[in-house]
Length: 222
Image (cartoon, rainbow, N blue to C red; front, side):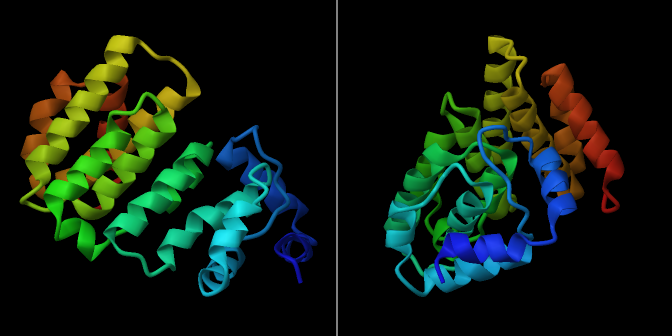
């Protein structure tokens, strides 16, 4: 059975879920058919063991579920450092929602074991003019570099991104999703380094600081 046929079969009876998903994903560039996340991950896992390159080549990027399967693939593929970031470079131009970006927040030993090379690669995303690329980079930082050895570099990168967005006075939807990811990362840092986070809050954009405080209040670990 072709992937699209399988997705349509899995979506039967999920009309309310489709509406719910469309609302929370909030990506008007794609069509939603209503397949649940566990099913999408199962399909991605199966494709990872088959001809996943062909799947990407022929993917319909205008169907949310087809795109989601593609973005889940890196979780299930056995890739080395170069292959991993090559796949990210291939996927990132198709990112059009927070959900796409957050699929790519993957913890990898080879990232943490090669911090200089990894930061260089991740910085390409953090310094991008595309907000979705920035969020992808922040997801990789969140997954791999919130340890004691990297915390100062992480905070420095967050301040750079926040300063850039504040200076450009962006007020679009994309701006919101970048700032929320900054806040989420800072709140996670605050679990072990609360003082450091509180020290930089007054220096952040007003909205970023507000979102961070909100997430810190919501956390049961701080």
